[in-house]
Image 1 (cartoon, rainbow, N blue to C red):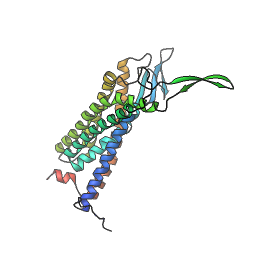
Image 2: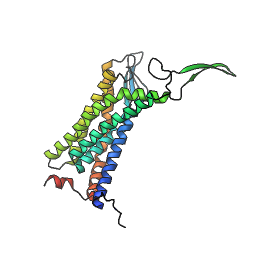
Image 3: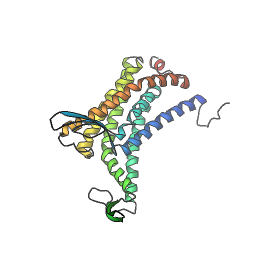
Image 4: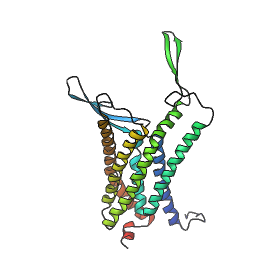
Length: 285
């Protein structure tokens, strides 16, 4: 049964190609918005090393220590954004991939505006010195005696998320622009250099280098401009603290980039048939 086309759609094939682009762009932009809102709202501690009383290092799972391996929750959806831009670069070209990066930047601005507007509208609560609604501790009489209970305002979560998002958004926007433009440029550099061959090279090569740029930039900007990273643990220097954040974040991204090689090949092979377009043949014309 033939699908009825909208007047703006030139053909069923054109509509199919635009739907695929919309899906890839939607996943990219949705992941981007999610990581910027939730970015540093939680740090996932994988493991740590700490010196014991005897001066030996003890290894712990899931606990902060002097040397901690921790990921910001916003890092989790980040690798998928590079997979999306690589697929868009492969099938839709550098200009459209770069335009998507620009739209992602505008989306960041929109998220910040909504957070600002939500906080500016009445009724505003009383804030403490850190800029979040005050938490009052009240005494409650129970059968076992008097207990102190924290009375958390209902809009506390919003203002806390806003505070964290503001702290991270400048870092993420600068790092994002640097990394994504780097990814798109390197992808097409490798594609031209290999004359459309060695798909794994341009996929992994562009992603690994651009994600190193992103990781270093976002950690350093978060620390020295936004002051939004957790403080170093007792016995750990700031340099050790920053290096471990960079190493852990980048290691996660490297593993994700390597693991997405096979899905990338599968997606490219399937999209060649579905979109009736061979980007490597186009490159060699």
